[in-house]
Image 1 (spheres, rainbow over the protein chains, first blue to last red):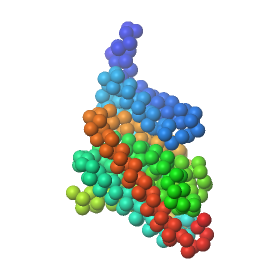
Image 2 (image 1 turned 45 degrees about the horizontal axis):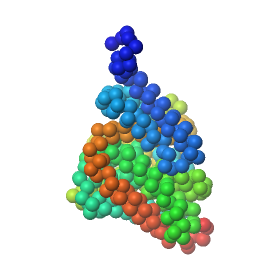
Image 3 (image 1 turned 30 degrees about the vertical axis):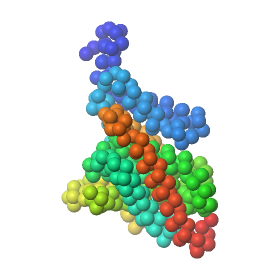
Image 4 (image 1 turned 120 degrees about the vertical axis):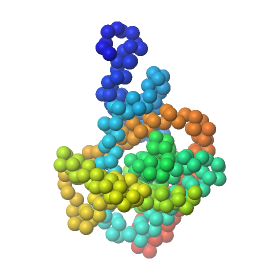
Length: 242
Length: 116
């Protein structure tokens, strides 16, 4: 296919055959999302990933392009998820002094928090009658999408659905954490940060960092540790639950 | 940058191998994460190239979720059917998880004295 006419549909067909086009679209949509987020003072509801997904998804639906065709270009970004997951060892390493000092509190809150995160999700989803594939996609929703999508794949969930559920969870956690902790009268920034990192991964961590440096450090640690623990617990709990 | 990226991908690959051989239902990259954290804590140092490359990738971590997330366009039906119930699950379980985690953490740091 060469670019012979200025007919818009022919032009689109030409572009859609270039994998690089979809890579460019992905990066551009994310930059647009990031600009919008910055313009709102990084309000959790204006999430750059969600905006980018909506923009690209709408473009694909309107133009009748399949996700498989889109992914031929976008996979160049996608492959970095693996090394990024390994790199989550960095927040654990950087906050090792916190682990050494509060290992009992961190260990207990991590184990119980991870169990309650997965368990409450499965019980509520079952009570409301959600389907099995949705259950498996929901179970890892508290950990970063990099890890949650891998878990969903292992247990028969739907990775794209998991990615969006993870982002929604992060947004909810970031919006709820301050009013909820005030209501519970928990003033310790370590406890507040760790809780939002465990329940709402990177988006919650970004929120914690905006509020307080100490809360941010505990949130980053909680997020990385919960990625590890949830990857082990989800297959186990789903097995017991089925 | 290149040296660090090589180490990260090598660790991911090692993780995938371990997951494949042991048939553990754990994503390979998560095993790679555990190997890297374990190595650094055991040796008492994190290789500098890994810090450089890792920070560079993690700075734009959320960009990496876009390609997979766009796959949601194929699941419009399921979302229309279950969307509202899913939101209820997310709100309640996120609030419960944060509450329990914060209460457990506080209960065990109070005696440490320097928690606040």
